[in-house]
Image: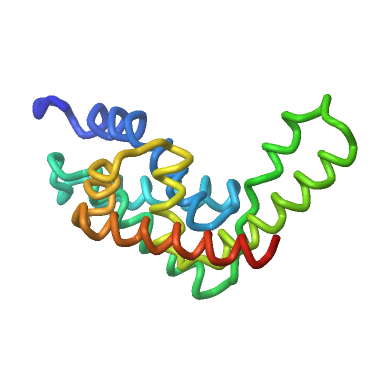
Length: 168
């Protein structure tokens, strides 16, 4: 972003460029789109309030750090369950009732298993699988190393394989 922007222009561009990523990240952590949108607004409100002290070069990782802290602060007060598989079920309207029932049951089991994955590992897994972000993009957004992303992904996949086999 150009350095010669005034505060309002910079904030508007920052918001437009990063809002969806921040909202998705918070959604992956919480499983609740309304909560993700509320927390995203809080993140950008905090950035606006601290705009004079924000390093414009590293604003993206700063946003993700604020988002993560906001979520964990909220999560300490209330336990949130993951709830995103239902949208997949609506795409299969022309399938047999038996298939739809099996798909729904599988979706519920998968949702339960994904919800059991630790928060940070689950968020990294969903950023990779849902947002199709590369490991390096995830590492930059969360301000962690590529190796850490690889370890979280390995942990998530190993956990999913072990639990899905048992639950099915």
